Length: 231
Image 1 (cartoon, rainbow, N blue to C red):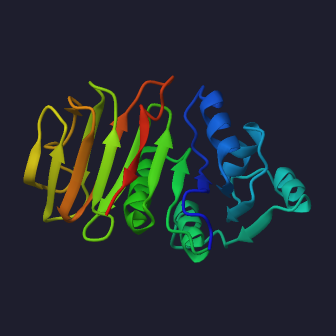
Image 2: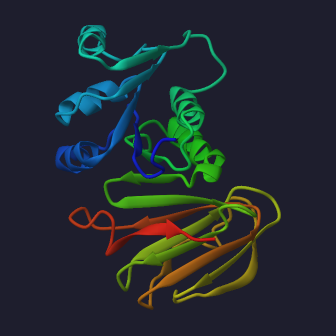
């Protein structure tokens, strides 16, 4: 079985002027899966991905042939399909027997693609999905399996909790505005822009699905310590 914390899916929408961020993240990852044009992001970071997956309408064909010859596993899909390359990449991670996945370079492009990528993140809550891009780390939580998140973020860090399913109920401790079994309407602003006030924070989803988004400075992209899901 694949190590649960070692798979990084790289999308084709990196944030601008953030080369050092992606270089450090991609080079440190155990297994790297490039979703279509994510191949170019990986190569720019100085890392040949272990797997390339997609319909390859945005990847450089010469680069794709080169990494395939060097040993990268290439998984092709037709251009006419009912899922994004990012969704297909997460499905592939699941088929590898992994229990966790991280996503990057997938949240800074077109608005419609960004919204769809957040949907991918939520659907991967069973994999303990985490998304990271410059200045942002997001976690997918869903009751009853991956329903609790423990964090140790610096004071004054801004954290938003956004519901992605009707009937979502959330508790949040360690914040200026604590939540105690609060009902969050879908995509409501009720959980937006909370602020860390204690040394540790806990978010529990009693029902429904949420994305928890922590905003960081570019020189401290993970905060004091990456979040971890606890049972």
